[in-house]
Structures are given as C-alpha cells and as structure tokens.
Image (tube, rainbow, N blue to C red; front, side):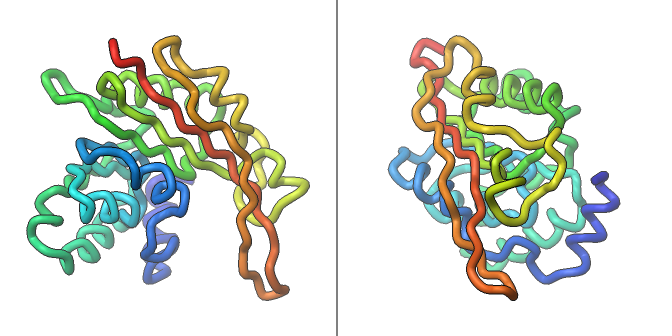
Length: 209
C-alpha cells in the first residue's frame, strides 16, 4: 500500500489500531530507562504517546499524513509536558535518513508491524540499528510467517512476512540478540476467539557502539 492508500484507510476509521499501546512494546520497554526513542511507521501514534507519557522523548515517523494528524490530535489531550516530547514526522522510512548529521542517537527504536519485502526490511533494520546509541534497544514486532497457515489475520503476502530467526540472522555484528519469540495472541472475531502468531525480536547494541 502507498501513502494515499493508507491515508484513505486511516480516514475511514476513528482509530484503526485502537488507543492502547502494543502489548510487546509495554512488555519490553517498561523496564528500560527513559531516553530518546524512534517509532518507525508509527501510524496513529499509540506507542509513541505511551512512551512520551513515561518520560521518553519520541520521534515518530509515518508516511500517512492522515495518520499523523490523528496522532497529534489524540496526543493534544495529554499534558503539555507529554506533547512537548512528541515529534511527528511525515516520511517514508525506506527512503529517509533515520538519524540526521549531528543528531543524538536513540536509546530505543520500534519497528512494529512494518511489513516490507526482504531487501527493504534488511535496509530499514540496518539503518535502525545504526541509529541506536551504545546500549540501545531495537524492538521488532510483526505477523509471523507461520500466521499464514496456523494463525489468523495479518497480511497474506508471504514475501513481506518473516520468522524471528530471519531478523536475528540479519542483525549487524554489534547487536546482541535478547529475545526471538513467536507468541500467540488471542483475536476476538465475529466467529469467536482465534489465535494470531507474532514475530517478536529484541536486540541490544554493543556498549561500545
């Protein structure tokens, strides 16, 4: 889908993904000391907003103008101290420098349900790792490849899906794998509860950078 298609999708609903933050973001980021975060393909900003409420300074990128407008509107209901820590940026993450010259590195980079063809995914993940500060964390969350046959929902194109081992094998040498999991997640459907299978990868950059 291109930016126009995502604009149309976001315009058709109040909040496409809901307001609460992603469960894996909460699980893995809660224990981290607050710092600078980068949220790639942030959508309507639910994860960026949650991080900002916890004291993180967050840059949130998405190529949908409509999504970012909705994100800013939702965030505007928060205290000024929270709003001031949020920086919305319209950009294509596959064609944007994730950390500009002289810009401080990030302590956390989120790549949550950003599904790309393999070569684009590898390039984005490499750039995300390079944008991390020494000791910084990368969190990747996606629909797992096995979800196609054994799970429910998510993209049906195998070319944009992967398993945790795929990402683990693509990490730069200065990244240490922390978590590579395929958790099952309950989904409430018109036909009752179904199970979706996710791919979750957490990695930490070497303290030496």
